[in-house]
Image (cartoon, rainbow, N blue to C red; front, side, top):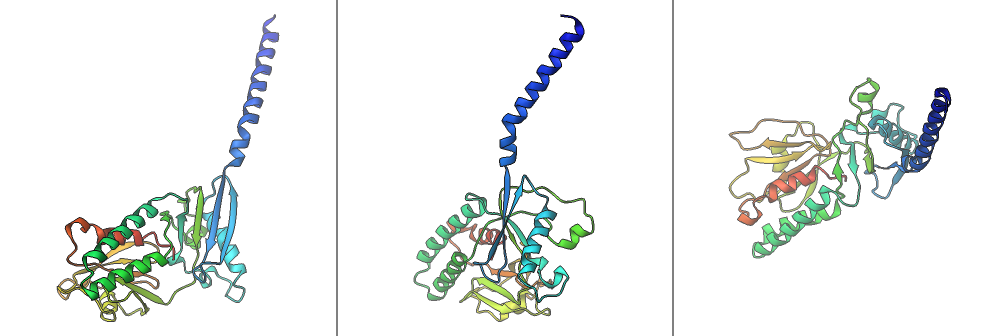
Length: 273
């Protein structure tokens, strides 16, 4: 065989091999999909679904989710800010097995143990039961730390990661309350006031902290966890956004449950609604 014939046969063989390779692997490539459930906290039963081939950019997820939500709210003004409370938006991993499930199960077990320890103290037992009910009625999924404000991407940000899997996109309207939970007689949602700081909301709640409260955990609506100092000697005014959760820590925990306050604050970062 002359060199030119050998080269031609070699190249034809390579082309055939490449074609076979693409044919073999293309079904796997196209089978990869990203499913996004779009929800608002108007009603946990109201959901929309978007399916992407492959892995979409966060901006694509936000755009598609916004389109679905705005179609259901035709009476709102044109700009997205009038429809979506971006400060409270969240993107979550809704796979069956994730970190938030493990953390919730561990906290539920610890709260059951704490209720047994405090069964003779009516106020403390009531606070533990109220918190358990609040957590049981909430939806938790692992939060993905990405920017979700539409204007962030309209401005041409270079930070626009790919996402994949089974996801939940929360695009809520603006709430008008702040939750106060934990070492209080009853978990409650208090009317939001732009002039109130954490200490003001605590005055409206019946807290159980016998020795006073130095700090509380504030979970802002976007999932950011903050420590707010509330004692007279260390108070530093910080803003609290509508939809935030103020967690009042328990005092006098048994040593075996020493991490409970910290774990609850971490879990609340992953609360969908």
